[in-house]
Amino acid sequence: MSCGVFLWVRARSQRRGWVPRRGIARVGEATFGVFLIHPLMLVPLLQHFGRPSHLTTVALGVPAIVITVATVMTVLTRGLMRVPVLRRLVG
Image 1 (cartoon, one colour):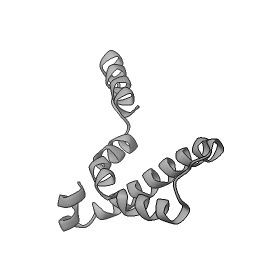
Image 2: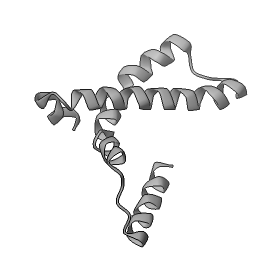
Image 3: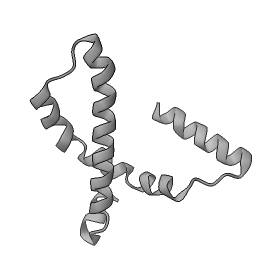
Image 4: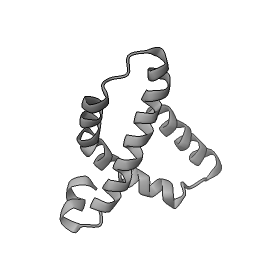
């Protein structure tokens, strides 16, 4: 899905001369950090609540987990990027 979104944004920007907004650029800068540190939240979360196994928990729980982890880790990564030493790690 991420590849599809990337290709869609790239095609849209090339076709219309569209430039991504500043917020999108900031989130884009944090993607490596989110990828790097998301297990720090995801693993304990799944250990505490367990993996979704029923249809309703998968249909509702998986999107909720993805959105929650991505949001929290993006905010945390943006905070870590303000510290010069840590910016080299997550930026």
